Image (cartoon, rainbow, N blue to C red):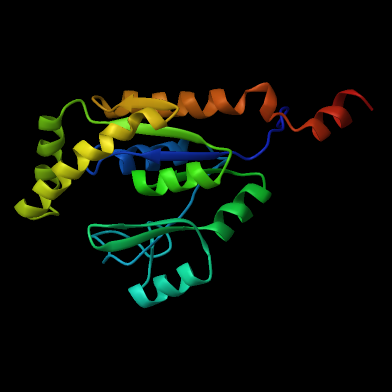
Length: 206
C-alpha cells in the first residue's frame, strides 16, 4: 500500500551524443514504476533495434512541420539536419494521470522547455573526458568518421550549457551514474512541496 501521495514531476535529461544518456534513462525507467518515458517525435531513420512509438515516433518532415504549425510541441529542434520534438499532449496526459515523466532530449530542446515551463528538474550527463567520448562514439559504429567529428564539435558547445541544469552526473561508471540519477529523482519526489495536500488532509485531518 502506498502511504505517500505526491504530484507528477517532469525530469529533463540532456547529454552530448555518446555520453550514455539513453542507457542510463532506460535503466532508471525499469527501477522506478511511477516514472514514464516520454516518447519524442523525430524525422530521422530508426537505428538498428529501435521500435516505433517506443524509442521514438518516426514521422516524415512534412508531418513534423504540420505539427509545428498546429503548436503541438512543448519543444522541438533541428539536430544534424533532422527534427526532434516533444508532444505537449503526451506530457500533459502523463502528469495528469499522476505519473512522473522522463524527457531524454538535447540541450536545444531542454532550453526551450526551461524558458516556457516553470517547473521541472534539469539533469546533465557528462562523459569523464572528450577522449572517452570519442572512444564511445567510435565503438558504437553507427556514425561515419565525418559524423563523429561533427558530434565532437557539437559536444563541446553542448557541455558549455551544464550551468543551466540543476544537477550534473559524470558517467565514468554506468552503474554509479544510474544510481545517482535514481537518487536525484527520489530526493525530488520526497520534497515537502511535492506532497499532495488533498491526500494529506483527507488522511490526517478528517
